[in-house]
Length: 503
Ligand code: AMP
Ligand code: MG
Image (cartoon, rainbow, N blue to C red):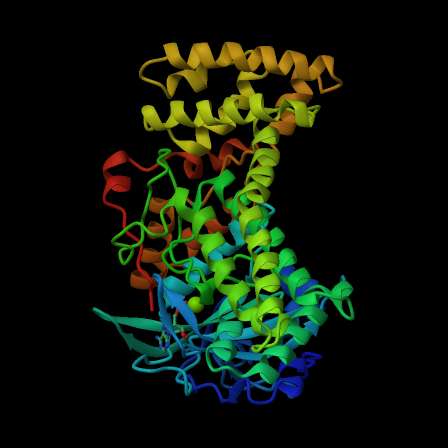
């Protein structure tokens, strides 16, 4: 198999941080999905990848010459409880490529068989959850939200045994890196300071090279990760995305959305929305996500403390604790700033100044209050607000059973838009068109996703998947042919909707 132009810095620079493992062989590989735009971004030739052996390649039967497959070690807090050893139980990093923009990207398999980190698991994945990762990841990317992406999915021809036997698949994942909060926790919990220092060096070189050689670089790294997470979570919140399993091993230091498991997009606005079948306490509910991100960052900060102060220097430790606490305590306001920045674009406010912060935050909060009170579809409401910006509020009103509170809010909002225009903001038509760039029409609706995956899994029919994929890749387009994908699920479907980890 020709080379991918892999570089393998993780394998080369961090011996002892992984186990070398070969992927399991697949009896009857079949390529189900190839992400051509992404392949091009990576400098790979999609036509060559599609050739007869593309299926063998992406099912793990034949690797590129320069691949060096490794299962990475990590730990993690899962639902608040610490596991000192998780690691890639069904994933393998093949190597890194430098993409066309000069960025280093990991290419990794998911579902490629057992590793020393598999514990009781089979190391495998089923077609459904892997195609689900494709759909949600591509939707996130099209929405402009940092995310890992799927390069390919290949069916293996094997069955995997869950509640029922399901056809198996391997997903090839592209990520800015697979460094997680849990990677630091692995070495910190073992008191392995040298490894921890090398990991910090590696992470800084990869994601925050400007910090290399800086004094207080660990603090700088914490701050950079906090900034990226504040921005990421704000973007999730502004599209109604619920990750579903924000364990510390599922929080990437790169700031990308990673590990699509029981995630989903909200339909009717509800801050308490939870879809995951395993999240009984609602720990990872929609509105908890910023709080959980802060909690995870605190766990990350704890791993950095031993690098910031010697264990026997009480004064230095106190100082380091104070410094990291300052970052952790600043996280809610970092997130609030990022959230409001996004909300303003959705509200159509483009000339706002910091003195408008309180007013605009209240406007957004009251709008969400309206949606919550009457269980209004989050995506459609935001989208149709753009029509109201050009005086066409009929479709928006039609979403509400009781329009009086909406009218009162719209009056306030129109006044605020007029002030925005007076301050140099756009005229109504331009305002509406810019609002439509901030509020998608198309999200991967849960019932559409299920429909597509069921057809693929149970009937071998990929057409619904391909149609849905094409739609979620154009979330902001006003194309009437996309209308079926914009409709909310019937409420009775959403009420009972549960997502599964899909392991
Ligand atoms: P996740 O909840 O998918 O982030 O996974 C949590 C941990 O379970 C990670 O260490 C995974 O590698 C491991 N894991 C998940 N599914 C499997 C599986 N089918 N076989 C082995 N390990 C798994
Ligand atoms: Mg994970």
